[in-house]
Image (cartoon, rainbow, N blue to C red; front, side):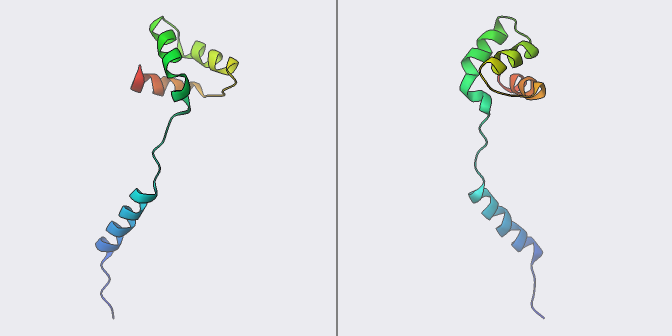
Length: 72
């Protein structure tokens, strides 16, 4: 019977995944400066969502609030 090292296999799989994984880029990045300007001017997330809809971008309200917590 061969020796199977589960930890070594798991380590190699995770290293492969790191090489394959692409960094995630928010689709809000395109409008970052405008969103932050409106947010600092007092715009609420729902108002930002309406503005993005005018820009033909469909985004969930939770996405905007999470993005503002990280970037605003």
